[in-house]
Figure (cartoon, rainbow, N blue to C red):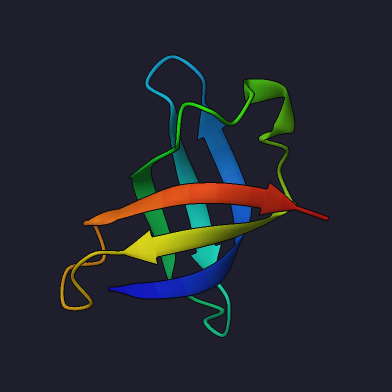
Length: 70
């Protein structure tokens, strides 16, 4: 398991999934990352920093966005 920082690039409130740019990578954006349901959709603002947990480092789609912060 690995915790990484990111920046929110998009959010779909219907599916509760986000597009995130992982910190340290200018070209890699992960799409369809599940967002923890305890985070209000009002907090999912584009450009906001976030914390991601990767359960399998070899599979970037096996992650969840667990926190947002400024």
